[in-house]
Length: 124
Image (cartoon, rainbow, N blue to C red; front, side):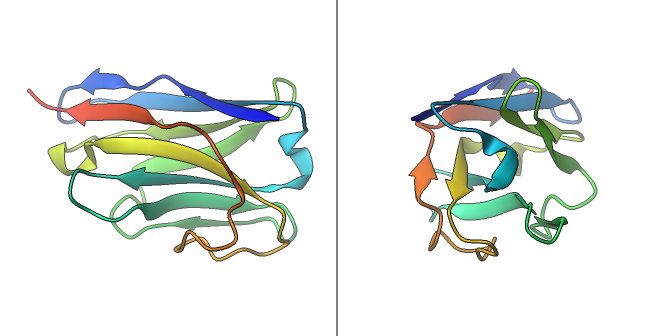
C-alpha cells in the first residue's frame, strides 16, 4: 500500500495549483482523507480533511475559502485544489489516510498512512 503525491511546484502569488495523491493497494473510498503541510522550522499542520463516515469536511482557518479537498473515486485519488496562493502557503504538503471513523483533522494523531510529501513554493 502506498500514497504518492503529485502536482506540486512553483506558483506565483494569487495563482493556483492542484495536488493529487494516488493510492495503490487499497481504496480511498471508505477512508478519512487529509492534507497536511509543514513549512521549514514549523510543525506539521492539518490543512483540510474529508470524513467519509459523516460526510464532513474541515479546513484550517488559514486556507478556508481558498483550498478545496475532494475525492476522485474513479481514479482512487484525493486532491487539493489550491487557489489564491500566498507566500505563506509555501511548505511540503503530505496526504494521509486514517483507519478511524472520525479522526481529528487538526492533529497528526490518528492518521496512520502518509505520502512522502511534495513541495509547494509560492513566490514571484
